[in-house]
Image 1 (tube, rainbow, N blue to C red):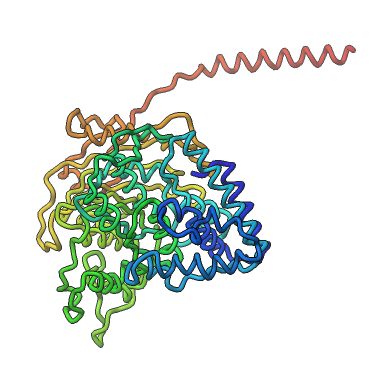
Image 2 (cartoon, rainbow, N blue to C red; image 1 turned 30 degrees about the vertical axis):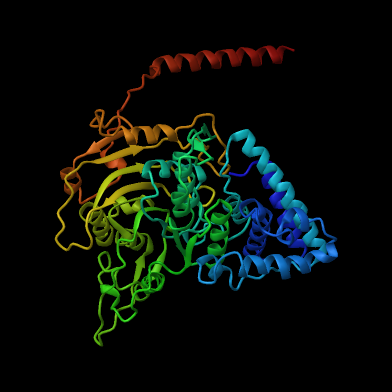
Length: 527
């Protein structure tokens, strides 16, 4: 999260852009992202020519700045920073730099320099080497607009992402994906985790997790794989795709494979077919594109309603298609969070693992579709764990209570899959280390490393005391409860009787107080 000093400077920059004519908040966020990216360009691309280096051209006379940035620097970013067919080049193809006022641009450059000075201070103070500035700025500015939390879309807090990466334990042995990648926070978090795993020196960051920055244990071949062929994402919002690809490149991911597509539609299959050079004439259901990803980290939008007609033909387990009298697919309103889970299961390779945030209603709602998705998690997958997070984790966007699902992919689309034979591990979080109100202030404690520790120890110690914050539930009991996976259903809450003062004693104390009041009033009257 941004410090108060950085928030103040970001707000001042936005106010200046607003006064300069950029009144659309999403447009302002996009332009700020371009400036942040330009500032860091010479850091992650140190061999670029001087004319593209912020440290040199930012000192130009303000009358030359607009032309230089628009016609030289921005065109270099769009056309020369990556190959034409790369996702970065595709995402930036129709990008436009819109700050045309020289005085406004000069002021914006000054604000960006100040922001990065504060970021450098924070990195040194909090050992927070992977500051997700693009995502943090996006989150802060959206909080000031009516866009915050729209359609259940909001950024996942960095410390929650870190915990999920620790639990998922991604590596360089497969592709890592976020189905709704947004500003790229989950992919940055996974990259951060892997870099730390292969660093010779680590430090404890402000959230209590080990973090390293030198990745000296990686050879050149693995570094190339990590930077070019590991991270993949999809998002329906073109602006977020641009912010996401820039964010990943600033962190050292040279080829961020983020695609602008609705991952619930047939467009997802078409995009994968194009990327993998498969033959387009093969029917969608027969294309060998399932099981592409070994790791998936995601927080799909909550409470989304979509028309069943726009859903991919391959998503037919939760909401089987209904056909009308003329043979066309009926138009129905369906829950997107359930479809995202089905898509994630479809996308995982056999043996692949996922760590996904869902609204808690997915775990206990008695509707047929909700029961179907829970059964799918217990048949096509091994549902290993459920972490129930406290209310308030996603404030100020929403107070919806959420849980994290941790599961492995067993097989692909088996119609007669047997239920898993392992117990499901549950954990109930009381705190995430921040106040559970709209201010979300940091507290002294760091409870998330303990959640990770208990996850890794789940098979080594007794896990059947349901009065604890963590325990295992047999699959047979879950079946008896119609596949309900709600933590509170299985948790044993201990009633601790309270001893209260006897009524007669309370009455005597009240009578004594009344007597003292009467005596006091009498003394006042005598005066």
